[in-house]
Length: 471
Image 1 (cartoon, rainbow, N blue to C red):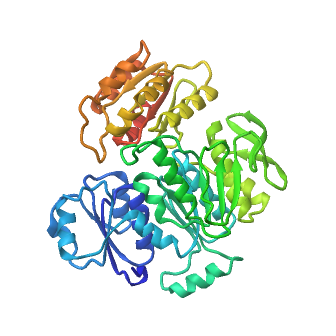
Image 2 (image 1 turned 45 degrees about the vertical axis):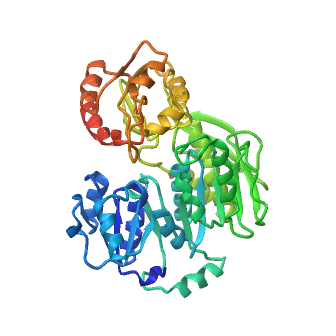
Image 3 (image 1 turned 90 degrees about the vertical axis):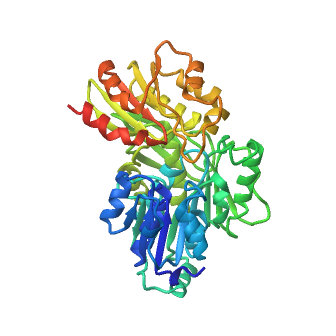
């Protein structure tokens, strides 16, 4: 597939966060981009404002007549009328991961893998590179608060540049073009990538609807390390129990929050919500960092991102500037309201480890405050596989409000429900409610600290909650 010959791309599921980043890439490079999604969202509204034509009806006559390539996400079932029509026409249909792998193969690729932290770390890396004036493109799993988009670029070659031009720039390692991507383990998508620098943040059990068990997940992460290009680098969180693939020669580093590793933080202290620390590297300790985001889990994410900056030769002053100016990602510990009488934080957390990290960070920031958490479970299979872990973490909230499970791509599983999970939560202050009932319940309760948590359509409630409690 020669992407430089593509004139028209149609996206089946264009409203997905990963799909929309690819759509923006093609649009930026002069390709005619159109697409379908099931429902309108703020993200699809923004894509339309950017000149991308999108339809929301499952009608095949709305598909453009001339399409060179279809980019498809498995979130859209193969039974979909549009998929069937395009397949019958013989138009190439590629998964998002395949197309992303093809694009990034032309560039110096930095891939962030792991069960948690991918979006924050990859967005942080993009910010570091852009702060340092490096040429880059970044395909992100969230909306950068610094740049207001999930496709970040800086001084990339013009759309008219040939593959030969790209390859000549890549060969000149003094001035590479970086591609920053999230290496998604779902459906083994990250095996489509061939990174120069790979990060692995964690290999906690997840996506067990795809993998037979946790061991299979770990083995697939090992295969991912075998995709690292010769003389590249692997940066892995200290203590992760996987053995990297030995078939490829590459450099290996570890990172940690504050325990001795190749990269870690020391002399950490918090003042007025900001985290101050010194950054320890394999060759030196760089003092005087300030992180513009709260939470020790975000400091750990910052260490991973700064390690990439260090390995790409970025100066200490630019690393410090990026750390202090990084604003984070929408729906990642996103402080929506901060008043003396009320705090509202929204977070994408949808795995027990992520939930625990978020709740603990809120306890650190607001000790003694009563915390109300609204959680929407994501996927029937994940709820079933991790129900005891979910229940244990959610029991740590002072007040627990549970929404119905967001199914995403799944059909219901008999016996798996939010009622099942609610029964296991050890709390005297817990309840189940619908999305429509939520704001009314919150207005009655008037919480001190409110968290909304989950990866489903709970996101649509964030703005209404913000509006309801802003005055």
